[in-house]
Amino acid sequence: MSAQDYNLVTFTPVEAGEASGVNPNTQRQWRNRGYLPRYDARSTTRFNAVEVAAMIVRRALNEASSKLNADEPFIALAAMHVLEFAIKTRPDLIPWERTEAVFTEPGKPLYSYLVARNPPVRDALAPLASPHMLEPLSELGRLWMCKSLDHVDHIMQLGEPAESVVLIDLQTLGEKLARGFPGPIATLAASEAA
Image (cartoon, rainbow, N blue to C red; front, side):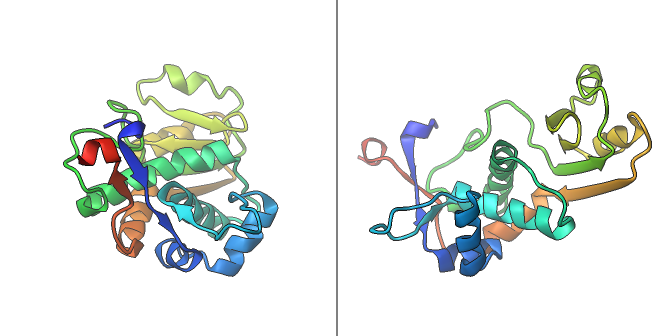
């Protein structure tokens, strides 16, 4: 199913907070900092599932390390994987039978772990040639997404010994998010529903 075939349901700040664990006051602060979309004064604030998933990823990063900042494309990519795990946990979040990924690229693996490594791997491209298919995502090898704990271990073996490591389990975040959503996160587009 392509992006044109469905519409994302939106959630109020309270509903988004219940799903992500990010309260509306923090959401407002994040909007002011540019981490969440801003709406004009006439609009009621609403968040779609991708934005709610980004909240839970940002919250996990903030809880893991107050010094760890990630850019928005990285947060958005991690959020897509979190949503796929949420749908695996609770298939009723989408109202159609699913044969492939909805939010991530079909045929690509789901990444289960987000890793922040300090110091970064100096030659961030070297691991891409490895059989582990690791993906450095930001700041030249500091932030990574991995398919398994073996891949995380591989990152730890690269370059200088790691002084600090932050490991976030995206599958667990997806399971938490699935329990928090009040209902479906998407609906079929009108042309598909007819």
